[in-house]
Image (tube, rainbow, N blue to C red; front, side):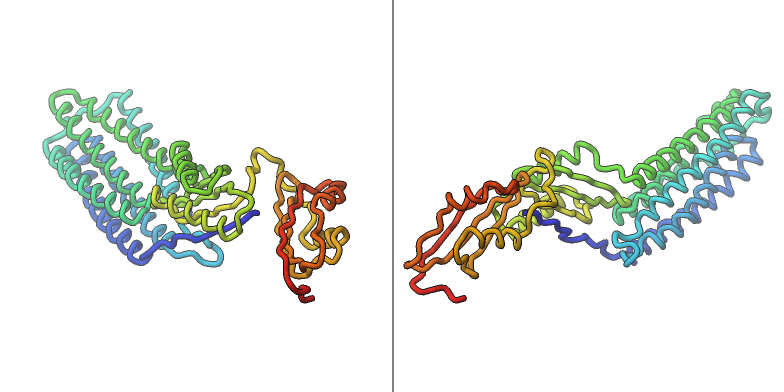
Amino acid sequence: MKDHQKPSVQPRQNLPEERRAASRVTVIGMLLDAFLGVIKVIGGTLFHSQALLVDGIHSFTDVASDVVVLGVMRVSRQGPDADHPYGHQRIETMGTMVLGSFLIAVGAVLAWDNTLRLLGEGAVDLPEWPVLVAAAISVGSKEWIYRYTRHVGIRIRSDLIIANAWHSRTDAFSSVIVLFSTVGAMLGYVWLDILAAVVISVIIIHIGWRFTWDSVKELVDTGLSPEDTDLLKQVAMDIDGVRNVHELRSRRMGHDIMLDIHLVVRPEISVSEGHQLGMQVVSAMREQLDNIIDINFHIDAENDEDQPQTSEQLPSREEIREKLNGHIDRLPPNSRLRLHYLRNRVHMELFMEIPESEPLPDAQKISRELAHYPWFGSLRIWHAHTDNEPAV
């Protein structure tokens, strides 16, 4: 018995509301980034701080990333359609990868430029106190927008919004570095300002690499961690009636998870009972990981990993009934035949109603006659006596 079921795709609820929440937090962050970028670039230029200038460029990269986020979120939060039955969330993954690649490029250019400055003559003018004010404003405001954005990203289950939140926090980290490097430079260690610019550039590269690499792993269908996979297998094994679990495969779409799993059950149970066991597994797994949106389960009567796959050449029900007719005299038309395809053999259970006046079929004799078929496994005959001849 095999039951290949796709019980339910958990729909993403309130997609329009999620789009509005994502757009609102992104626009707020974009306006804040633009304001901070202006004051830091101007402040860094006027008050002789290369670190603050680089930090301002970093803020403008946040503005660019916010524009990317707005466009991607509008498309990726559309519901499933005929061409995209699982939704459009991979577009969000692509957007996250573009954002990460952009950060790597910007960080590399800034790191190279400031490394050359550090190895050269360096800056001759000392940073002035307004640099400290601009950096302090940046730290406070970027930490606030990070917490707000991350809260929204977790609520709507968006890796892209969460990534954008961390992008904002890197700006706060870099502004902290500006604060300390400026104090050091004002005390006479002018090279600290350029070194801080290099460190900030490396932070930008690191965050960009993390976003890009995570997105690549998702696009090539990297599965769940071994710990989560083992947890889900154990959840399935705890369901009464599930004998074994194998071929548990997983992949991600954004924050959501999709699973394919094979469940081994007793071969004699009905198709409907096997399906019900699968639905119990689905429910138990979703209680463990609430971001599973789709579980495609396959019911097996035996472990396909331990046994050779069932041959496609085994006879069909009609072919088997036709052969039985040649070995059982007057096979009643209302007889029921249950077939079990196990280990590349067919095991048969025949249910018959036989009048009192007729002899019972000899199951052992019939089995010996069927034994020359390479596909034959076993035959069991169940019978009940009737008072009258069965209707034809």
